[in-house]
Length: 404
Image (cartoon, rainbow, N blue to C red; front, side, top):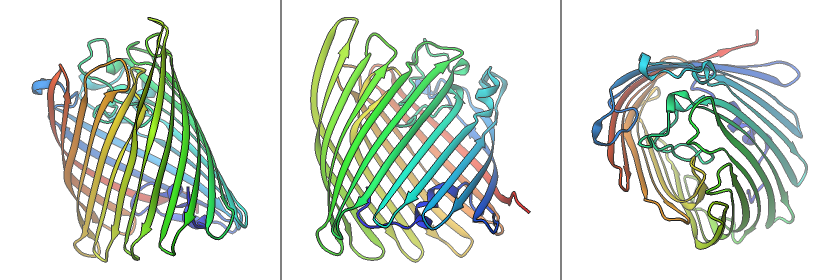
């Protein structure tokens, strides 16, 4: 939800960012076509995050090819993005399915803006192999895959994701704005393991923002989400939340935002037939600083999300990123992310995940960039022990013009 009008040009920023230095071509009708290709070499000491360092070291080469087509007018904007990310790894680490190796994805975004309102629609879809899934964090839709589960054959499963969102923002008065959002997604697993549970998610949110002062906004957000898992243990859940918060623009470089609220979750199971009601807290806090040569982003959140095993998890996350511009073409940075998950109902052990590391980036020319970095990962599960992994990577990205 936004409290002040955002023009189309700013809203399109999330559509065309596909790689550092991506070249752009615009025709007289307002169409732009951008592209980027990146190549990454990554060496990992424990890619499967086996406890006790039992995993085998491996080397992976990932190529990502992406293209984005956009068009913008005074009142509408459209963006279409397609990408493939083939991976070459050691023979024992390669998935068996060609779709999983190519990892195709497609995204669509449509924006229509009126004098005091904005309607945004997004569609997304992807096919990926669980052999290259982010075992540490996964995503908001897919949760975390447990590599210690003996029933999970990660190299043989393909994850198919399809989803969409529809958001309406309306500026009712110069001080008050409202938003209404609808989100639907489906995650399926096929061609392999049956341990991972397909999940259908449907969410509805509404929000109100009031400008309290020229630099301070108050927010109130309510939401309800339905989860249905293809599993008799956790077939259906519903989670509702109400959160009050603020957005404070301290100055032109620093912004703070946060919120605190309550959630109520009801979970029904068929085998055995039972239902459970759980209450909890939701919250978020974020800081963004952008200086002349330095930038810092910190965020904290707590809420409910589904896991790949079909159960809802109380998830607490923290992320941090710091960047320092050494000169006009070079920068140093550091990223960190931590997350703790625990079952909303039905017991189960906690999951702790940590990823952090420094990196160096260099702009070779207007269209080409290089990035070198180190990553440390830690995974700790009750009853399964602690897993650690180290990785170094080198990424080369070049943008190019697809229209002449």
